[in-house]
Figure 1: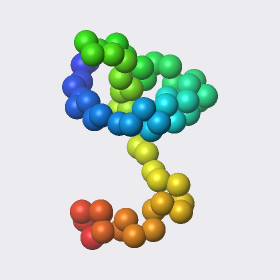
Figure 2 (figure 1 turned 180 degrees about the vertical axis):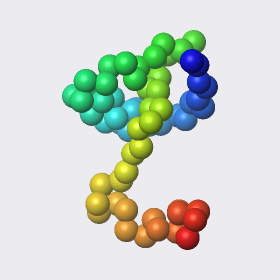
Figure 3 (figure 1 turned 90 degrees about the vertical axis):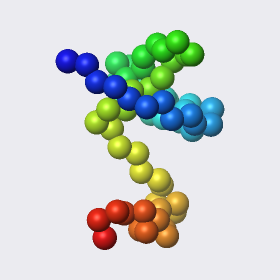
Figure 4 (figure 1 turned 30 degrees about the vertical axis):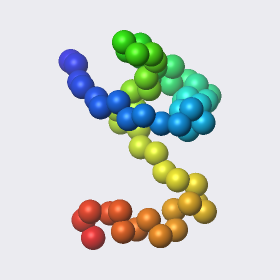
Length: 64
């Protein structure tokens, strides 16, 4: 089975933070080689801002 994904550019700091956490959790399989470099395939993985950053983001929810 194959799936596609969209590549979302991130700052190097954000990419490194995600990569470090995935490596620490033994998610090495999430890293894939693409033409322009390595990407992180986060299929099935959601991200959430730290507690102090989530305030005021409730308006992002589409279903409310």
